[in-house]
Image (cartoon, rainbow, N blue to C red):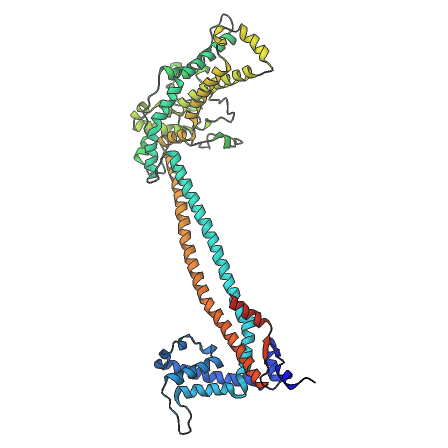
Length: 555
């Protein structure tokens, strides 16, 4: 038989979830303890309302400010009683009992301690906190922490997107030579740099290398493609013309752009759009009577005096009856050599077709714009005209294709012996051009084509020729800037949301800590009280409560 001392030292382990049943089964608390607790709580509610009306009692100790009437139990009532006992004058009746607020709260404490009712309440609060209250608060804290982490990720993404938008805006402005303060005005000012570009184009076209290339091509056509007793055909007429009669370098915007007309019903004087033939799907049915192409600026055409223009269909009923003489109507003669086919050698998709087709309405609009300001056509450089540039490009692509083919033939190892034989019987003027010389010519021609067709040059020309294009380009740049501002405004919303979540988190931490602290205090109270009931035997409340309290301590 174990000794009594050994039995006294054996611990009593009680699972926290069974603590209330354990106390009732062993007759440590009465079975109707819940009813008694309800009566005590009604007294607490009444006395606490009286206590709150007494402002002096409330302001004596800040502990009263943190109390909630629904959360006042045995421990809180005992603390209130102790505070009132220290801070209020002690008054007793003839039986030696306390009176006033201290006496009322002393009665409440005694009611809890009678038959150990407070142990039943403590067991109930422990189970409620461990199973529901503390896990819920932890989940809320984790949820808010996850939302904060998500906000940080979103904020980083928005900052990165804003920086990218700002970089794109700066890059777009730098590409066009803008500062980004007044986009529309700066675009018009930037277009004034076109004379220097046109000067570079003329310098390349008038270079010795270009002269040699034109002479080489002309001699090749004369010797290789001209029959006897026939005069050689003339090639590269447009390049020769621009060399002999260089165009003016003066540039200016059309009157509609300068006047900044706000009428949406009237068409712009000269309308151009930037068209990239590589991205155009030409699988369409063309009906010029229904489709407004809205592309390209075409110079004034010679209507040959008939007033209808080229390709105009006239019904016989529309001809005046008194125009019986054949002299009143002159049939225009069109020479095949005068047609600008505008076929690109390198790009079968027709790189510059965007500005060659124009509806009759657009032609009328252009004439109206020129008629409003007759000096526009005279003062503006011909290089601003689409048709003029396309003629120059036709010749450049033609000679480039010829030189490219000649270089390929001269460098072809398989036909090298045949080339040497042909070269030996060729005229002396053709023998002096080696592959290295031809490649130098090809390089200069490529530079001239690039200067005429690069994105910046085309945009600057369109800025001067089309009010609609200018408005669209300015709006695109402003949209990039507005996108950055919009993203930064979104950061303000995220900052407000973060502040709200941080406030919620700050309010949850004290609640969670208070629940853990109260659970720990109630656990110690139950273990101490039960130990005294069993002659000092150690009592341990076991289960998930210990892991939860230990986790709270480590956190």
